[in-house]
Image 1 (spheres, rainbow, N blue to C red):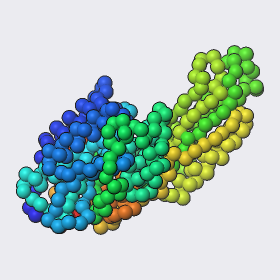
Image 2 (cartoon, helix red, strand yellow; image 1 turned 60 degrees about the horizontal axis):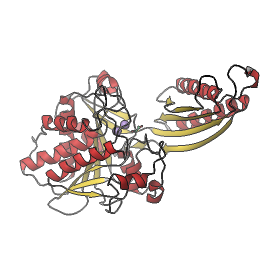
Image 3 (cartoon, rainbow, N blue to C red; image 1 turned 90 degrees about the horizontal axis):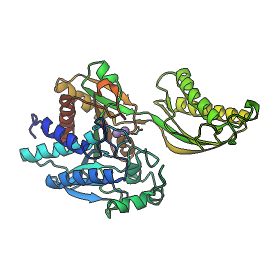
Image 4 (cartoon, helix red, strand yellow; image 1 turned 135 degrees about the horizontal axis):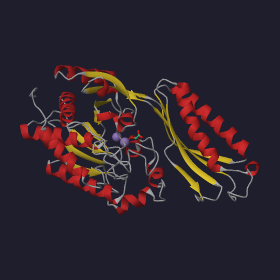
Length: 409
Ligand code: GLV
Ligand code: MN
Ligand code: MN
């Protein structure tokens, strides 16, 4: 293997820009919610690139796309990948980088005429974001067997759409066996999506693992009544209880400190009219912590608060869990290799945990897995201004290239 082989950073950036035009929204971002027409168009483009690179593309029943490059030997491939679905107001890099850097690794090996000993694979998993259909990391969960296929296909999204029907509609209800091929190792390059690398002038993050994630939906049931004529003492205001919960989760994160974060990202009031006390609020709470015991403590305190506050207002509460992941640690030897390769390339590197969820944390249950982070300008992601400098994209892809070719020998 040529140790000085490098990716073509401008080719990687042009693919990211071209994919970013699919589902483009005003201001420079993208909207490719999972299994929408925009997602379909993005998938079609990436699949066409996979075929151009000579990869054998397979699509499984939940729409995961896996492109294989033969090695000198048969056997389990070294897999690169991520996702190409986005949140409704997303950027060009979240997920897309891991997939397109995988294709750039393949293109560089093709150009150099190098065949690795083990096969390589580039994958994109369905609905990593979990914005439209919960849970997040949906496709990789099915891939590893952690989410049964029939349950996945029956999942109803925030707009009432059903996963199985949407897959068929966009032409990605594939026939390949779910969970094939078995993977020798999984490496995901991703933007950090937070401020840590940029603040310390680091160019590469060797990701130690992913924090635990707890998503809950609460439905609060009150009584609609006249906003002018109903005395405050007689109200059963679902909107008021929702607002108390929003304020509480901020205090909760502050009180628990450390790595605890807490977000209410979705709130729907009904009937949502200026002069009617809301009779219903549907809301989500996203809690995350690197420490499982602290995360459980956050959940306990949240449920106690919701129960007491709703009872005091005479409002009913029901809830359902939309996602629950314990913290995951990546393979220690792979983390160390990311660090060592970055040092060899004279790229300032540090270890850090991931704040966001990733397919790599799901793959980690079935094979050695790791992630490489590159800096996010201003630490911003899930935002149309999400940006990573081209030199950093290329640096991350070069670390990916080296690590993957090592693992494939
Ligand atoms: C998904 O990527 C998440 O971390 O919310
Ligand atoms: Mn992502
Ligand atoms: Mn994301």
